[in-house]
Length: 287
Image (cartoon, rainbow, N blue to C red; front, side, top):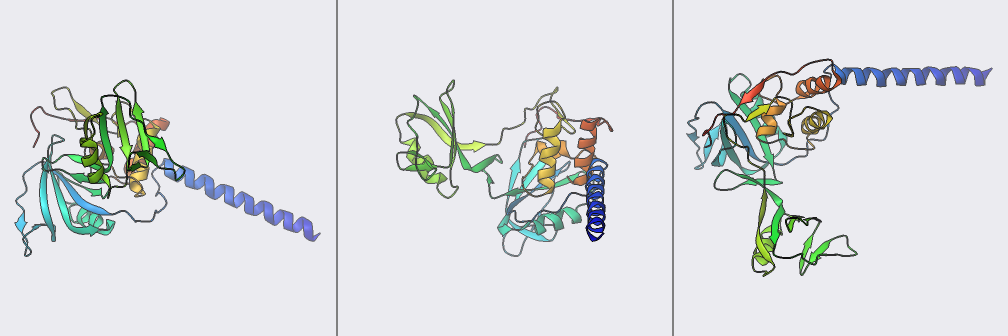
C-alpha cells in the first residue's frame, strides 16, 4: 500500500515538473524572461549610437562626461548611418555601468547604448578589432605544429587556435591577448609572411541599396534560429553584439536589446509573428 502511494506521489511530481518545463518553453516563445546569467563580462568601452552630434562636457580629471560618468577618451566610429561614439572607461568596469547608462538614456529618442568587452578594442580611426585574434597572409604555407599542451606553435609563438584558408594562404590565429602585440611584431619580420595584423570586425558597406534588416543579426540576409541565438547570448551576457548587429537586434526599436527582441525574432522564425522594416543606410555617412 505504501509503495503504491509513493508511486502516485512520484507520478504527480513528474507531471508537475513536465508542466513547469512546458510553461517555461511557452513563456520564452511568447516573450517571457530568459534565465539570469552571471554578469561577469568586463566593459572597456560604452558605445553610443545617435542621430545627432553630442557635445560632451569636460570632466574634473581631464576626461569627458556622459550620463554623469567620466570617460578617459572618446573615439568616433564610422560603421552605420548613425553617429557612433566609443567612450573608453578609465578602468575596466562591470556590466552595472552599462545598465546604469542604458537606463539613464531610456527616454532619449535616437540614442542607442551598447558596450565593448575586453575581447575588442578601438583603433585611432574608430575601427573595432579583436584583441586576441591575428589576421595573417603568407607567401607560402607555414609549418605550425600542435604540441602536447594543446597549443599550436610557430617558432616560439604559441597560438590557442589556428584556422588555415588554403585558397588565400591566410590564417585566422587566436592567441592570448597579452601576447598578441609581441607576436605580431615577430611575424612582421618573418620572410614567409606578406601581411599581418589584428583581426578587424568587418565594416558595413555604405551605399544607397545597403540596409540593415531588423532581425537579421548576423547579416546573412535572412532571419533564422542563428539570429535569435545570438540575441539570447547577448541578453545572457555570454556574447557581445556590436554595431550593425545591435541595430538589427533591436527589433522593437526602443534603443536597447533585451528579452523582448529575442522573443520577437524567435516568434518570427516559428511563424507566429512577422518582423517588418529595415534601417536605411545612407551613402557617405561615415564618421
